[in-house]
Length: 589
Image (tube, rainbow, N blue to C red; front, side, top):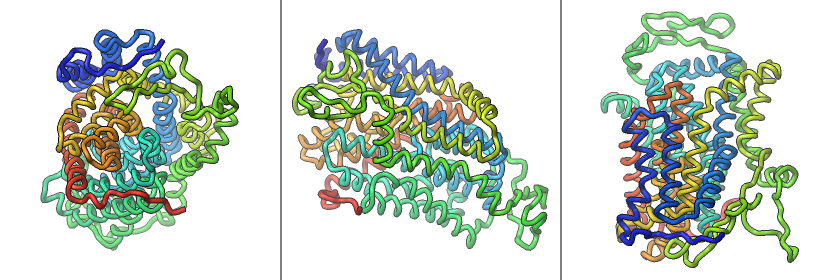
């Protein structure tokens, strides 16, 4: 069965675009306008996408059904499994009591909520994004902030806003790798260009985050800390992306920003400690060091002191033990991301990883099984691609080398080192699975929606509408990446959806394709906070399922405003600072 995508089935581009947007309208309309649970929103959006693809775009029903199943399978292994494993590690940390020590180690650094959100939501969240990605930062950092005393709504919303600037390099640089693969442009150039756009937002987002919580005056009270966090992360992000590689950009940025702010806070403190009005105590001044005495070999007992709750201070050894699960997570994810290790695991365990053709040559392209009846059965046509080209559909069941497996094994090792037995680990995993089941359904159906959108050509129709903006395309092309992430919940998927279109359109308009393909990824990160997948993970992790619509309405304008800033930066590169668009760079080995 062969089928070629149709991009204007109704004879009027604007009408075809409106019809192609119906799945998005249904998805976000139900999520924002009605108190519908996100898994039902995802199911409704996916169903609408299948119906539109079949009825209006003449996609054969069999291909539509197989495409949807392909997306669900991809979502389960590549994304839901990562989130489930990361939350499992968090639950082990809670079960063993180590999470309490982690929280109090942060509370011992500062009781100021503004500084806590910088440390946890931005710095620590960036580190987790770099290691695992795909919603794990929102889940883990959100639960962390609730433990510190933030209301669930604040924890969810603030982490969604914070999880923006680091997203382009999430999960060991996967979005950049994907962008280079689909555009056939040098990865070093794309990586460097993204690293010349997003550092500006890395400076803006910490300020934006604090201003979301408090007034302008209270924001400027902690401006020195905001500057330290933003500039340390931005400079690391720029340096690593331009001179090293694309794998460790966020991990190094997160580590450097955490260390920088910890050192800075040893020499600087805000004049007043800011707390929410719902906190049990809202002190205006922290206690002095002379007023705090050590007890029990370097530990403080929790007690009231002039209206200030003193956090328990633990020895360095106990704090390191508490943070050990996340250190192990980082090591596993880094090890799992090494190309030689991943290749060896795939060759040993992944079915159909290496296919030899009849002429004796190894089959090019991505590894895995050819999806029956779908692989190369659908072709994209001009103007989305230069010439008609079949769409590959291969599913690599890389059960061992998958990032989620690395996270899961890290959780198992951490649990064993913390004294849990196998039966206890199984019980905790079952509780995690039950708690995250609806989030996993929503994630899977969202990927099903994204894949139907891609293989039916609905994404191309929406993308082509952006190309009609002429000289403003650098601005609106940035929103094309935003749309891709809002649809799929993944910067990786958005790059796979629109990377090729960005290259073709930019070349037709005389704009540098390296810039616009990088803009797709850079703009996409600002759509992360409004996609149903991220909101579902946030509400599941913070135990406020049912409030998805409220959270969506709260973060929506932040998402659009921040993407507009990225679009403006891209416009400046396109027309004023053209010489700063990189070409022919090579990474330092």
